[in-house]
Length: 380
Image (cartoon, rainbow, N blue to C red):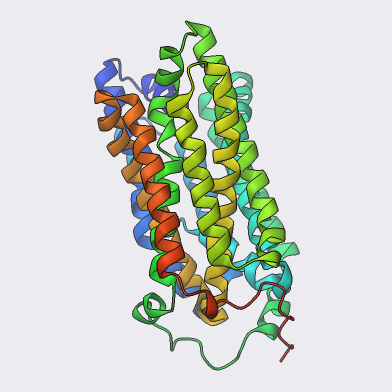
């Protein structure tokens, strides 16, 4: 997707404004539609099984990506990206499958492991995509992408054993839990706010970080190198945060871990306001990354303790909607704010994370969250 503007240029667009417009619309329509559809696909997953829903999504992506290589007009790209959003939703379902499959004491580790993969995908994808596009061309790169989705679909079909999960699930409740019921679960609305806020802050760096690096001294190609290094540090440390969340939850409550991680993230972002050397930004970036990764995994893990297994698809779908709304809103708000002051973006991030820490510590009910190390439920 980072090379979509180049592809639009191959389709006949020459005006930079038109390329930017179609690229923005095409990149934005998928998460927008997915945000609406994720809870619906999750609810269907609760009713008919997560595995078939994930396979449905992956197979549809094979078709859409293959079709991308044959488009001839910019609006074709936009239409296919809209269809992609319509059939998406496997991200929330894979988190649900990880939570359902793991023993109770390993839930945080399972969710963190999948989230690490979700972070590494976007981090490595542009590099791999660049090499593929150079080797086979932009059009055929979409066919290669379709092959990746096909491999994923086959992997899920062969390896994932949904019958083992069904044995652990309470029977006879499917279809009784509505979206309103899910929203009424203790702490669920708080967790939605937390995930929205974390995504809002996490995505705020994209529009302004290279510009901020440029104000601290580096020039020309050095800006791209330093900014790329910082993005890599953020992705790697966030993955580390996903991993360390499990041990932290075994020692303390989800409320304490989320609040402490948000406060730590606020301290890391504040370091951006105090740093005057671009290379020193690596330290607050690492602190911020670990904190974001830890808080995100802890929030999803906390959700598994308040959502019944037969409603987790709908619950995780709603949490994904909150995440995607944060993903959509953040670049717009912070882009406008960055136009007036780049440091104001980091100040807002610090305020948001600090507010989340206070909200969780004051509002979240710790007693309703069973300890992560509780014994696994007996098989039925």
